[in-house]
Figure 1: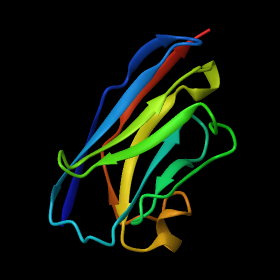
Figure 2 (figure 1 turned 45 degrees about the horizontal axis):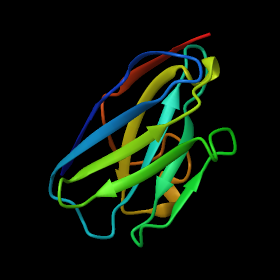
Figure 3 (figure 1 turned 30 degrees about the vertical axis):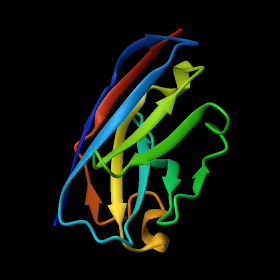
Figure 4 (figure 1 turned 90 degrees about the horizontal axis):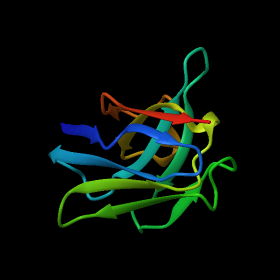
Length: 123
């Protein structure tokens, strides 16, 4: 069973940057896909960024060219570098892991989730 723990959220002004971290522990299948999701109050959870087992990445249109997902295998940590932040990026951010690309590419259907890290962007 894989455990995920996010950190790095906080309050930042619009235009600023934050880096979220997701520490991975427990058994991790080498075929595990990982992703970042977010959920703002009153809104559905949405996928933000994903990283494939071959380290290829994909992004939601709303964050493309502003956010970057990466994985440091030596530190067992997933990152989300967020730049040019906007007020609409404010949300609870969760990392997720699954051995099924089909499940993790659809928001809310991954098998493993962290508890989340809150990001607030002031305008």
